[in-house]
Length: 184
Image (cartoon, rainbow, N blue to C red; front, side, top):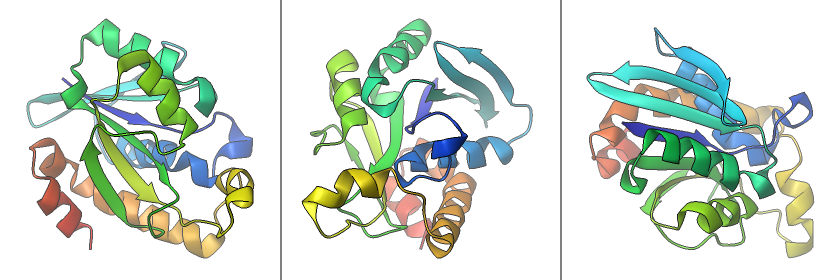
């Protein structure tokens, strides 16, 4: 079993916020797969499907970013999904818009969603970091992450999500470098 967890804030008000790139990816992934089972569980949106013979669970917490760790931990503990088979998809200010980096473990780098998760399950999980650009000034960060993508930026993110969805099997087979190269 593999967990793909998209970070974001719930509600239509936040749908296209920069902070919601994780939710946007999960939405694209579910749209691209057949036989998806969906349910509301663990204070979030749970879905499952197969990629080859691998059982994939996706999860979007209905808690706000700062509080998402509790529902995510409940979900992971229920299915006994190991941290090395857990992928958290989230925004990253320090990466260029539409680029990604993947790493196992690390610090939250000030990301409140990651802080919440780290406090509940530890830090040893995979992070798929999607670039949203930095606003240029530390005082503008909160406003930036909670603002909507511009139309041209959203097009970049949507194209990235389509490519990530098409290549997700490569990543889940452990080929991180090939996955990233396939997105170019």
